[in-house]
Amino acid sequence: MRSIACLACGVVLAGVSAVQAQHVVAHRGHWDTDGSAQNSVRSLVKADSIGCHASEFDVWITADGVPVVHHDAVAAGMVIETAQAAEICGVTLANGEHIPTLAALLDTAAALSVRLVCEIKPHTDKAREAEAVRRSVAMIGERGLDRRTDYITFSREALALLIDIVPQWCGVYYLGGDMSPDELQAVGAAGPDYSMRAYEAHPGWMERARELGMKVNVWTVNTDEDFRRYIDAGADFITTNRPERLQQLIAR
Ligand code: MG
Image 1 (tube, rainbow, N blue to C red):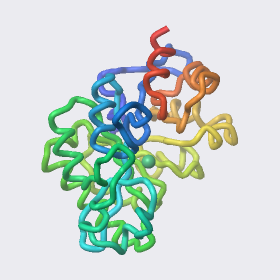
Image 2 (tube, protein in one colour):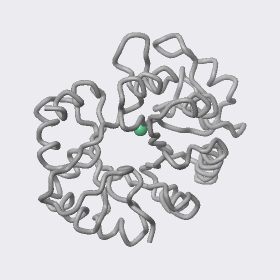
Image 3 (tube, rainbow, N blue to C red):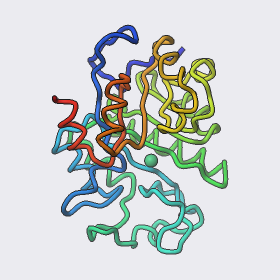
Image 4 (cartoon, helix red, strand yellow):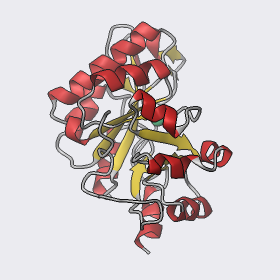
């Protein structure tokens, strides 16, 4: 069984009624601030600069085999999976940066201390998706970043491959919202990383995940009301577009 202690480095929590320490995960980096943009290198630097626990980003692989960081399947009208890296990395983001390669993002991360949450996007071509998984894991390992990286995905295929190949100290969390904590444990996942809607649809899942020794992440939590709800519920990790506001509420 894979270790599940990765996302919460250094924090040992026991029992669902214990006081939980929440960790802030910046969703697509800290982008809703001056000079930043979603999934930009700057958003990673900004997440680090405000002391986020982790910064999340999304990975696709281009037709010529280059992992790039972007949320949507399409960039400037081009389908990333079938485009060349030079084309995709020529697309300008809202802050003036170009879409970064994963290599560029990781090279910057190596000089920072923020943890990384690497999302492998579900590719249309599952062989290309597997290549995205293998290349991302290799590149993170080559830079010595595996000790502070966890992986997330909506893809069942990518989930299985990640669980198979990542070092045991990396957590692999599932985003889909359609596997129970017991099912996640059976396949070796570190825990659920589910939407608020998924937890609301399955009121017992958060508690059951913790009974099984898993860590629980929830996304994308952005309002004060929802922040308070998931702080009170004892979510271990809260993924948000408003990391500074969440930090303020946790500090109170
Ligand atoms: Mg993502």
